[in-house]
Length: 317
Image (cartoon, rainbow, N blue to C red; front, side, top):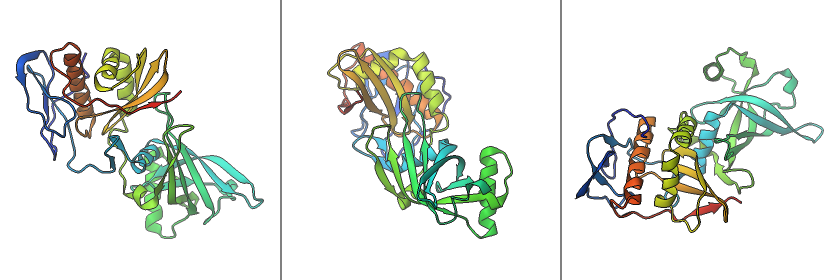
């Protein structure tokens, strides 16, 4: 079963990719670009393509994963509730739950009332935000900075507009504040070692273009494409253990993360990269369909696995 897609135009700076998803035609293969980790096979009809961008940003080449700055921006874009913490006048650390919105550079906009007097202007504070990914992983970021209140009317109207767009409600501009970003700590999950991101990298990074539909797409794949997901483990990953169950955790413009269960070895996580960067839902579905077709071809011995398998596997427990 293929993910439902529509035709789309694709461009790429590095190579031209056109895979055909249908019944294989023997004795004929496409020429493969050296930069493409996946082999291109010739099939009949049903052309599919991949949507790409010309200049990858914040790309971690070795792991084909977005940099922590991009992940942090994505978490802040998808999140709406966080924990605002500061030191009270009595010297106690205090954290409260707050709603927030973000501007185009990821600056958090808060709405604080009079009862939050301990969070005054210039108070050093932190805003901690978590994003649950399909119940399997919880990436998070903590913004360190200070509470600020712009004094010009134009900026305050902009923040009011951002808040209204996010929550559909008018607020008193006197209650709007921002957290000026100085540093960001990004963590992939609980018990993981965090990575620090400086303010300039955070502001210049762009949130992932697949963020708004990533969760629905992952749920669709895990529900309707179980055989494809399990086949990916055998074809695209170099594993030395048997997998009893596999699920997608999350998908982004560079690939997807999978959670693997082995009855003898434990629980693992593996990153499967896309053959090219994707920028929209159609491109993501088209790429998944083509990778599924290629994995089926390799498993059925219609073609040799002429690509490098993923060797990096992270043990979870």
